[in-house]
Amino acid sequence: MKRLQLENHEFEGSNSFYLLEGDGEVALVDTGVSTPDVKRQFDEKLEECGVDVGDVDHVFLTHWHADHVGLAGYVQEESGASVRIHEEDAPLVEQDEATRGAMEEKQRSVLEDWGMPDDKKENLLAFITSNSAIQGVAPDTERFEDGDSWEVAGVELEAVHSPGHTAGLTSFAMLDENEAFTGDALLPVYTPNVGGADVRVEKPLERYVETLFRLADRDFDRAYPGHRDPIDEPTERAVEIIEHHRERSARVVDVLSEEGACDAWETGAHLFGELQGIHILHGPGESYAHLEHMERHGVVSSYRDDEEGTIKYELEDEDALEGCIPPTDEY
Image (tube, rainbow, N blue to C red; front, side, top):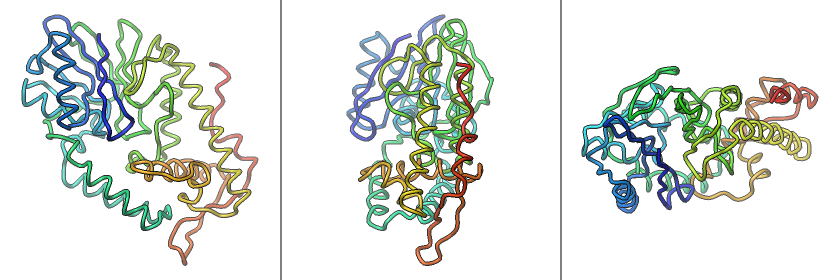
């Protein structure tokens, strides 16, 4: 297995894709954004490994975001490779108009609920529109479910559904090695966004915390993420991110205690400050994920502000915060 890195200017600066070779087959886990520069890098990285894009037999995609799927259609056009994606993310990878339209409608609705100012909304929509082409050519996909497995390129892979960041995000466990490709479910330096990265996800923080516990329970020896370097202690990293979200929830409580009722945008402004690019979506989205989670646990309550048209949250029972996220003591 080889880890190959691509530089891009659209998202987090670089992302990783992975090359598997064996038993006369070639497989990839993820690709990169569909821009001329990244496509050139992609071809060069494969060539350095003695592989032509036309040699690829299988592509496994962790989730629908462009920095992971943008070149999948190109690979399929050149090689006829199968492209596999979890059933919940497949319609977006296939660029199904109805699914994309429903998500855009949902985005517009939540941006209003979150209280995003008009100028920031315009900046965000301009950013999304200007980067729409990086999704690339839509591939034909083969859909899978949690627990499906394949023997490809000398490796046995198992799909480990890992939602939160997106609805269909999936890690791929390499069963013979007790290692996993985790996409953006588990990252080594920063924490994956929940709430804004895929507005289709119901109960985003709850689902993501469940994912982190699931990955911790698998106790992989190593994880290969979608960005930056491999993670040598995946269980420890999963626990760190759980604890990060526990601390983030406490910070949200502090904001409401100090400022009074806030919508998701106001909360995010206190947590993250000024935001640009896609983070205009991610900041209030993360705030919403925590506020929504704490509301279901009785920490906060919400009401619609008729004057502003946003959903405001106010502190209800700070003591209930203790039960929001399960303990990690056993790890």
